[in-house]
Amino acid sequence: MNFIIHHPGKAGEVFMGLPAAQLLKKHFPDCHITWVVLDIFRDSLGVNPYIDLIEEIPTYSCKNMMDVNEHMSNHREYVFQKKRSVIDHRGIHLDLYYGYILEPYAKYKLKLNRLPFYLQMFKNAVAMSAGLDVDLVNSWSPPEWHPTEQAVQDAIRFEQQYGGGSVIIFSPYIADKTAAQDNKSDFQIDLIYEELKRWSLPVIATGTQWDEKSNPSWVIDGYAPTLSLGALFYLMKEKAALVVTPNSGIGFAAHWLGAPTLMIDNRTGWKKQVREYKRFYPVLTDKALPHERRWPMFMKENFPKQHLGSLPFEQIEWSEGEFLTAMNKIKSSMN
Image (cartoon, rainbow, N blue to C red; front, side):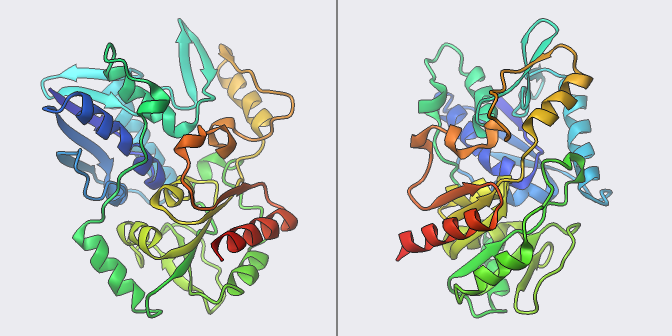
């Protein structure tokens, strides 16, 4: 049996889709798994024992993250046309993004998916294992990531700038302007840098080649392509004393790679965005609770506790007080 997993999404999301390949190999040990990914996010897969072949979709024509998103959407629409899977001469094509955010639940009806987003992707692999008594929560296992030789070489070369050793990684911005409410960086960058400097460790600021750069002179430039994605993952796994990010896939990846993580949740405006979705999809339903402001599927407190690692993992909405409290909590737990 051949499976062709289509997950040409962004870096952290590709990483968190990896348990899908592990599940399929467990239940179909003789299967051949091909993973289709955008070339700029290929390093999110690393060297994976459950993936037999990696196919890259080139993005050389993309000029910003909006182009990348469109590239991804066009690929999925072309292959799947809103279906979870398609069978052809190559095997079973599986869309890990099917039902992501907007979930079909009846004929011509949609609902906003409230399942933790990494389980939404995993759910589509579980669907392929129908009849095999696969439990969604208990069958999930943390993403297994091993660096390529190139990723290790890139990391060693990058470390020469600051002498190597423990490091702090900070992702100040997200370049994706297609979701302005999600990705608005409304926290105080100067205050964050001031606090990070107190740790007396090298600080790397990371981002895509399309992110703006505005860093203090003492901060190390880790924006792509200066720091490759594979090298970034390697440093998070092996050298990070702390990773600070907006609410993004990279932040969740840092946690499952084993780094102490502080995530500043900028996915606010849940109610407002529900109204926006309903304007476009009159058949959409949602059961948003009165007190909810944030996207439930991206909230750590909604994740099954057994899925979270033992190292510090804080998720806050921005305020100076919450930030300083979370930083102190992480630091004290590590002493």
